Image (tube, rainbow over all chains, first blue to last red; front, side, top):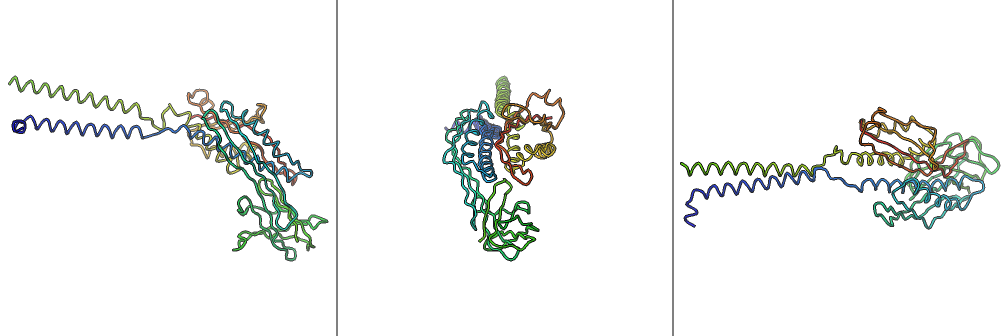
Length: 232
Length: 154
């Protein structure tokens, strides 16, 4: 031991070990930085594909409800028919992906001619994409529109319009509303909106003629879904 | 004297060996380096970009409006805004029978880019339909459209 310590070569051994250690650590750090600098995540492409199918399935529900509420003789099976077509056509649209979309619990309903009236449609979906091994991805799609007539003062009607989850629809204009008194369609002079604490967002529909009750108000949202409400 | 000379040779050999180790380690690390501009993933990167752009437009209910109302200038402008400047695009629309809609020319970039580029990404996006207002009445018909967006870097 004494001999080893007193030997001058021992110093070189220590220096060499230190240098090798520094070298190994530096190379390790360099390699770590190199391999983690950019990581390709192949599933990102499929996330948008799943999102696109989910979004357009919702669009289909909205479209079916718009069709149902805008027809004089509504077809009760319109949603089911459209869903069946959509399931078949998806496979043709995205060839090679092995897409299979199944729907269940589809329902379409209108509760109209009341103070608070609604149109609603919904369906549950299960998506499989064979090319990425995705099975049983479940999602719900629902479309909803509610029109509530709050009151009528002279030739003014105050209403609220709500969408899914009770969110207020704030982008409607004159051509989205129609008011009639059971005999004729009244001329809407302006539609103003304001915010208040209880109902949050209220539309005030001004008509040129004095209105006699009962009155009927129709509303169409941006998706073309219609609701008809009656007051009182 | 001879002894000192032998030690010097060993040092040189050690230095050469150490250099080899460093060069080998650097080249080995280089194999794993994948930069964002790597040609290996260029196509998938463009595909992701294309899907995201179409999905964003669809979420804002603009894609269906532009396509079903045949607003070709608006869709070209929207894609030019949303895609990076160096990404050239060409969009074609089909119905379910595979017939092109209106032979719409939704295009940006040089035609040679698509002819000469090795990395062209193709994105397929399906639309279900759109409720259009005709004569104060809404028509909501199931009428699927297939959007094919081709992307290449110019």
